[in-house]
Image 1 (cartoon, helix red, strand yellow):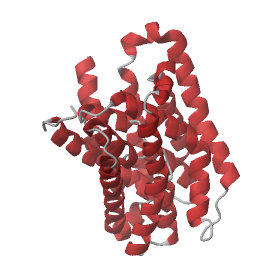
Image 2: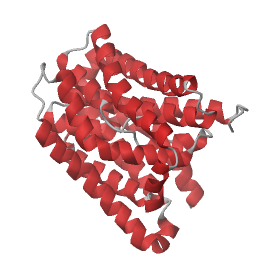
Image 3: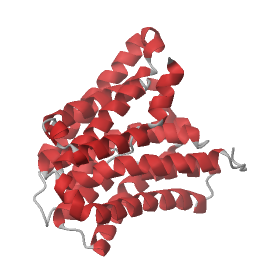
Image 4: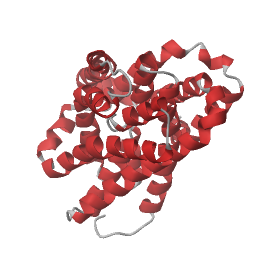
Length: 308
């Protein structure tokens, strides 16, 4: 049973593509689920919290340099790259807003799995994801406002409150459950990633359905922007730590963590505060960053290196 669940979870990119194609051709099946995006994301965050423990947060004191650099790149490189790419490609305001919002989001939980498969530092990945998620309460709305606030109204206070509800409360609840009921949960813990996969796949399908007509005219340009954005994170996240003489495992981990955003959060915030079109970059990013991350993990896992 456990192996079946693992296979299903590892095939996340495939399920994302299948559901996206289904939503594109049969949007009526998913458009009515628009209001389910935020609850589904909260479920994912509870699952993330249930995979954490107090020990994960203590690790921040063991690798402060790597964690600080990774989180800095997360919130400095990715929003800036989003703005530059959007301007180069001439994206309209709504899509630019979606790109910046995506870039201003913290690392996604899938980065932990990809880091493990790539032979990176899993403890560092989990710690970076946790701390960037906590910082996102302030960083995500603030950075979005700084970069696109002059083009569109950014309800920074409302976004901050939403992130608090969507992230901090569910993650804290999940962490508390794991702390007090860890032994009882151990037999079923492998189910949590499966639930998260199902939830994010449904979120992607909803956004694709809501943007079905616009994808026909803008799909290629948005996919191009998303690929360039993801590659910016992978390249900068790997080579900047490398230039600072960090070991191979750390470089791989930071690259994956920086490049793999919490796209579900960007989708939820975009739909709630901007538009369905602004949510499109996040939805497409969910598919692409898992594909690119899986391919990169496969390459790195077969490569001998000094830091392994």
